[in-house]
Structure formats: C-alpha cells, structure tokens
Image (cartoon, rainbow, N blue to C red; front, side):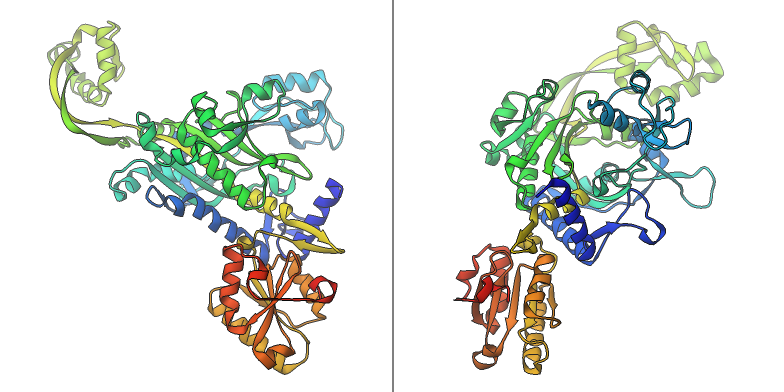
Length: 590
C-alpha cells in the first residue's frame, strides 16, 4: 500500500468512525487544532492509563502524580527561561505578508537540517538560494525570533500577565518542595503529570504531529547527583536491555542508529546517567506495548545547538510512520539542577534537600562577614542598607571577593576586600544540603494516539480492521443478536450487554443491519471481541465469542462471558482457550 494512500485511508477512517478530525470544521478549520471524537477520547484515555501504569503505578514507591494549573504567572516562565528562550525562527513575505517557520522553508528547499541555526545564518541561506514565499513567490524578509508562549492576563488588572503553560514541567518544579514534604523528604522522587499545554506555533503542519494545543504526559524524576546507584534502584533490572541509539556524532556523519545494551551505553558515556537510561527503556517498552516494534523506533541524541536551554543531554524518541518517516513522540532529558536553581533565585525560597549523615562529622568551614565598623565610618547613613543587602548574599561570594582581593559591590557601593572578614571554624555537620538533579521523560499524547492508530490499521478480505492492542481498544466488547427483529434474541442480548457493563467493561450493543455488517463496523472501531446471541443461546445458555483479528469464534456459557473477556483483554489468552471452537462459513465474518 502506498504511503500516501495509507495515510489518507487512516485519516478517512478516523473521521468517519469518530476518532479525530480538524477542529472548527464548520468555520473552515484552524491549523494546529484537532478534535477527538467519541472513540478517539476512549482510545486516548486508555493510552494515558497505560502510560500511568508504566510510569507511576509500576514505580509507586518513588513516583507520584499531581495536577497543576494550565495558566501560570509571568514570573514562573521568566524563571524557567521560556520568556527569553522559547522561540522559533519566523520570516515574513514582503509581498503578501504571510509568515512562515524559516527553518522549515530552508529544510524543504535545501534538504538540510536547519535546527539551531541563528536568524542571521538563516537569512543568509534564504538570500543566497533565493528561497521565496511558497504561496505567492514573493521575496522573504529578515528572519526573526518568535516567542511561542500564549500570553494572557490574570484577573482584571493591567500588567498582571500570565502564560498558558507550554509544558507541564514548571508546575512540578514549583510544587517540588510541597510534594517532597508529603513524601517525607525522600529521594529519589518522581512527580508525574498529565495535562493540556499550548504552544503558539508559527505554521503548524503534519496534521496531528504539530498542534497548538495538545496533551503531554510528563515526569520529573528528582535525584541526588552524588548517589547514582541509590537514585536509580531499578537500574540493574535493565542493564541487558537493548536500545537503538543514534548519537549526535553518528548523526553528523549520517550514520544509522546502533544497538547498545544499557550497560554499554552508560559505561561508555553514550547516556550520561543511569536514570536517564532506565526511563528510556521504560519508554521503549511502553511504545512496544502500543504495537511499535524495536526496528521502527530509536533514540536520537540532540546536539548542543539543538537542545533546549535547560538540558545537559536530550534524546528524542523517534518512531517511523507512513507519511512523514521518522517523527518524535517523546523527549528524554537530563535537566541537571537548572530548574530548581532558577526558581530558588527568582522566588527566594529554599528548594534544597537535606540528606542526613549516618553519624555527624566535624568539618572546618569558612565564614565571611562585612566589617560593620568600617562600613559605619565609611558610609554613615547608608551603612544599615549596605549591611542588610550583604546579609542576603551567598557566603561563597563574600569569601571569593575577600580571598581574590577584588572586593564586591553591594547596594551600588564598592566594598574593598580588606572590609570583608573571613574566619575558619570547626563545626559539627549532621548532613548536607544540595539541589536535586532532574531526569525528564516527556511524551506527546496526541502523536502517540496517531502512532497507535496507524500501527493497528489492517485490511483483510476487502475489510478494514483496527487491530489495536486489546487493552487499549476504545470499546472492549460488542454484543449483537443474530437476527435483527427476533425479540427473544434481542432481550437475551441486552441481558448479556448489562452483565458485561456491570462487570466494568465498555460495551456497545448493535442490532441494526446484517450480522456481517455489524461485525465489520465493530472491526473498524477496533472492538477486540464480539458476543453473538443466537438460537442455540435460547436452547443451552451458550453464546459465541468472536476474535476481531482472526475472525475465529468459540462457544462458551453465557455467565462465563465477563471472565473470558477479562482474560482475553488483559492476559492475552488465545480465543480457543476460552471455549469450544465454532466453524463459521467465510471465516467468521457472518
């Protein structure tokens, strides 16, 4: 099947069967926004629940989940660096006024990677290669930087500026101190969150691959940087797992991804921390569980100019899709202490962690203070102000200013080195304070929904089957009476429907059209199992159960349907283990 043809078939099925479609269709649509329909919402919900199981529930002794506001005050995003650094390059056509992502235009025209180039470098490339407006052919202007934050006003007062969050991370960093207290001060500590974010993309494209509003599943894993083993207590379980990785050096040389065991990658420095490697393995297994095989996935290291401003190392988790080739579905970053340090500086709140020693130790420490007598004589009425500001300075700065002989500026006044006194004392220390480092796995939910949808698309005997992994199928079972207008069959079918619903399953009932058409409708929305009530049901109390993927059927007692369905969905049991095989003409399609 041609790649373009496959994509079109997927999008047509998604719209027709109520999974997803462009938003605001009756007004012509708005780029970068997509609706999720009834079955799309269910599919997305089940993928989120599976992520929650892999990230949170399977690590519940270390990872907790919180929820924070979508809108944050400007100060938060000034501290995080987003106000200054969360930008994309934009260029405007001098003829028609349309605006475009400059790097995308360059990449499309020259087939090069333009990520990380400066505006000046992009402007030069556009002029040298005469890259024109793709709409009207007009000359393009100078490349500038465009901030992707969605600004808003909090409350009725002018100047009380806020932003729609572009990621979930800052809510978790700002809440770190509170969550740490709740978890009794223990590290490692993972804080997970699932929620909507907004990025004011310049020119969204690739349908659901680049949206202006979307859902992220993210976790910030806080660790002691001096305790690599204790910070990742489950690392030993994955040392022999294999990851496909393309380092930045390999990318520069245009080399393909290479397989590394986790142990090899960590010991060779390909992955800079055990915890980063561990969560990459979890992420790989999560995508495997959604139908993506290892050979269609790899981790792509970003270069220094490609990484976000907060990152020491970042890997994009890439998955192959039919239309666009390799797309990023998750990012795995080692953020160091960047975020907590910034929020400490901007808020003035201590976000360090205290780790007690097994036994107190005696250490010699240096203490520094300003000579009050000197400041009083020299600055007179300004002395109090200077001493108050000096008290706010980190002691390390005062010590450095004294020992290097440079002096220091406080409240606008020059304090010479000789006015800074440094003394050495012996103190009993019961522990150490440090700023935790952070490992972050972050997943784009909407992209992953599309990936799961594409990897499950099948055609068989002229029919479409959405062969989703059973545990993420939006509808878990269907119930149909064999004949449309037979009241006794209909009543028994409704009884089975109610039994399954009462047992916690999401079920649909369908008695319209031929049995074959009903099976076909169920296959198209990915229903793993369909139970049919027929005349034999009225005689011996048994029903048939049909497998979506094989079209095989078995017969089993009516009251055993809930347990059989549970085993089929969650234990992966073959349908022939659940009842007596039934031979049906046409392979079970009716």
